[in-house]
Length: 297
Length: 323
Image (cartoon, rainbow over all chains, first blue to last red; front, side, top):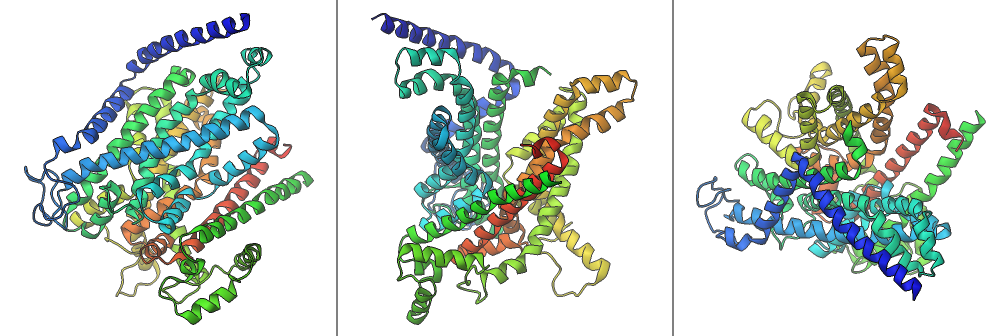
């Protein structure tokens, strides 16, 4: 009885602390103008991606909605491509694909990374050795090439692309979280939970993880950017899913017509750039908040 | 001396299993791919006799562990298979293309280290000044710009519209150039691809140098140097930069894998006749043995260069030797 009360009061305190933490975080984050700009840009891109059917007037991927190679005009704000497809619609719908691939791939990768990092750091020993050696493999090898081969051989569809990106990128998260776990598991409150007889899995999830998760969050925003860039790179090399609008595929197609239609390359690439810029700015902002030591100088 | 030998031996012992892991990953991919492994190794158009010959060569009718040992022994002996389309061995194709890629990577690395370190030092002299903000801004743009798109934009602006550089390739064809003219011709072809490939790393090195300089310049020995009355230049460069360059060296050593990935994309944009173009062509024509061969080759190069960096570190920093 007593133990339960102790644990539940401990938990309630934790919840209150997290509310304070969020409001304090926003107060700090707000002061970083570049980070706020990045966040607004990111929200704008997400909004456009969600509202794609409302802000475009031609379906993406449909050919001959206009003549081929039309330069930008009011009707085709970003021009048309070799098959007379509206580049503007494809760029807007491409934001959906990029965001989806970015979030899914980074999500799966972070999830794997959290699992591996937590078990590795908490249990240590042989398990730790095995998991860290396998993460070494992916940290050392040319992962872009590996992802390229996986997609080329198993088929160029969006699921394989997401899977390939996730499978080569989880070790960064695992490494970060493992390091946090190693220091935090020695702390008194973890010992206290152990003495109170909590299960290992409970200690990992509700005691250590909430205190160890912040570097992982910072890293996650960069993982999304990396995943989006990787998808674009794969598609640019022809290992993209031809059935969804994708900035990388558009740039691949544009490569053949750089002399006649600069707009085929300019607009999809600019969106890709803005998306990565926004994610990097947000990542920098989060980093400044979580490592204030670096910022004071 | 014996500690250095021991260090080298230990690092090599760590590198060899990694090479086997790479070969194993390839083997797993070939065997889990949809369809028969011969499809991956030979394509769909192979004749029946050729398929049979290949099945015998790789022992595809034998149990899996025997197939694995056969595969490993082929690769270890440098036999990476045959291209489905070019009637040449994958090894020959790679050695033919390697010099162009190395030239591109080396030039890009030189540009990014020189300009990146300069930008980083400039930025760190007065944090949050206009100069710092400019340098940091340039770095942020560089990190966020997709390599291949930057290449396309540079190509459109400087080669197609301004006509300052050739549009593609490594040499002017049809004219036989010799000596200095030949070198200048290659440099002119190299300029845009090298800058494209350098951009990301330049930006990263600038950020790294800035952060590292700020860290070093706040340490006690810098204050000592200043209070001894040394002039600002000497303190910044001889005492500060020398110590701040350590993370940059690490980055350069460990980024060879990323450079290769960037080179593939850059070469595709500029038609640079290196391993990237080879990979792109083989991807389009589903020439799987070439794809796999390039992956093994690049992986081994990355592992070896990491090994060299590790060993060099042992020489540079005696603390590492004792570990």
